[in-house]
Image 1 (tube, helix red, strand yellow):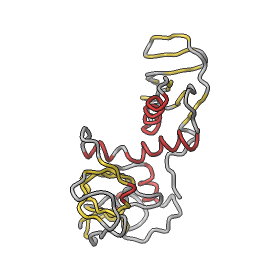
Image 2 (tube, rainbow, N blue to C red):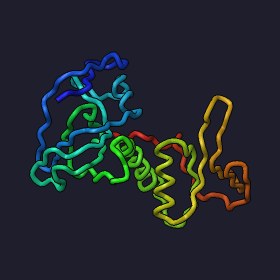
Image 3 (cartoon, rainbow, N blue to C red):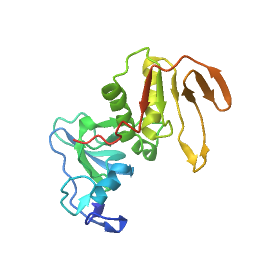
Length: 220
């Protein structure tokens, strides 16, 4: 198969397009023909050597992808032809390629309303959002929450997941759109709520989640 191979730590010039053996599914694994893969901060940090990962070169980067199952190993619970999206296990990459072998438990059926590009962009950010809400913040039903930096992908997902699961309203801030411009979509500060230019008094949020404090790159 063809892949974007990383020859060494460094800039994008360290990539080259080449051949590598096709993956074979092991027990509980599937092989996915990749239609789209995303690029996130963890990818470029691994490329630069920011993690003490001791990569063996040439190396294939990429964690999030969407595609079609082309082979199934013993015990896997998906079928050939299933459209799936997934994120690689912590500390593992390999999505910048035509094919990838992955545990079937890490893959989910792609929603029909999403194309492969959209699904590939969901995996790590939505997983991070669930991790932040359930494991780090340990939110309880009925709590009121202010999510800071709503324009970050993971915090967007956090708001969607929280309001869906609890049935309650959450409040969020937007990040800077330019050097001197703050675009506010929904900002709860103290006892006031702003949506666009309309302000109204609200109860003070009980909890604050800030993505300046919660890592968006869980690794083992």
